[in-house]
Length: 343
Length: 92
Image (cartoon, rainbow over all chains, first blue to last red; front, side):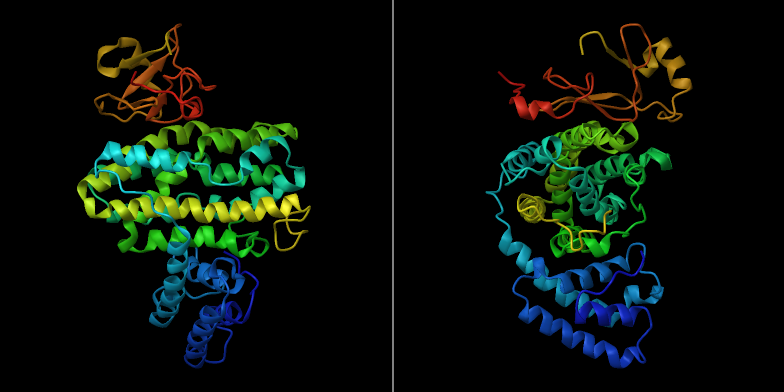
């Protein structure tokens, strides 16, 4: 991923350190650690803190495609891991404060599946999909693509980290879902490739992270949450619950997104990404609820609460992003950090 | 899905022919299972072919499919999640 622009002292120093542009990393790392502590203690809300969310995103990115100019050794550098852990601890606590975990069902596959369907069927605030279908302008469709591009151009990767931590029925189910996400062996059918094609058709940059500078902190938080859950074995129940909720809230919204792009005259090359998800996720949500999440809980009932936490947390943080976007649009503003970035 | 049939690979000659050129199928036939999802679709796994009434294979892009049984899908025979919108109940 190309180096993003810093959003404050912390991300500026972090990017300099990993790019090797500080005189001495040994001197800079204690400063980075101190800055991290100061940033965490003075932020009014880490979910909306651009500097902290970008720093965390870049630290996670070392585990994905890397950051241009950053040496590969930084991925497992103990000092950076300690700094990441400090941000993660504050982030996770804030997410837990924001999340209401529902009453726990019986630890059976069917009961877990039914509860996840109930939870994801609740009204979670404003509907971006209905707005996109009926009212969004062409510029707003492009903004929508920018927000989603942070995840969709690497679609499925954060959850894939969980595969080695699962076994049996839940593992087979996650692999079945992820194989579909990755195109069943056909690179052009990878969901990330379909999304890239949609962006190209609109004349947008389809490079992973190409619009990172444009998205607000809350969009980074939505993505950081997946990495937090995916990279910690401790949170394997949460990443499974997160994926189940993600799949269960996808089919109908994607049908509406597709309608929004068709309304503006865009053809199948643009809408295929969304059309594909209507059918794919109607399959995935059944596998995810019953076999992946339900199967995990049946094999280890202690993970029941984590599964529901992961699902509820994903929905809660997603709702905050939707609220930000819809409030911006209702006020006649761009929901991005710089209004000309998506043009 | 009235006129469509889910045919077991091992039992149907037409299906075996159809399978020969099918990129989704691997060499060894996996047993077919159909999960009746409560309040939802029929989830079909394994080596099978999905045929229209004319015996022609229906377009299919994934190994495991969900078949509509609420009647409201616009992607029939596949499920599009509409059962949730209409409050479909599989049990009386």
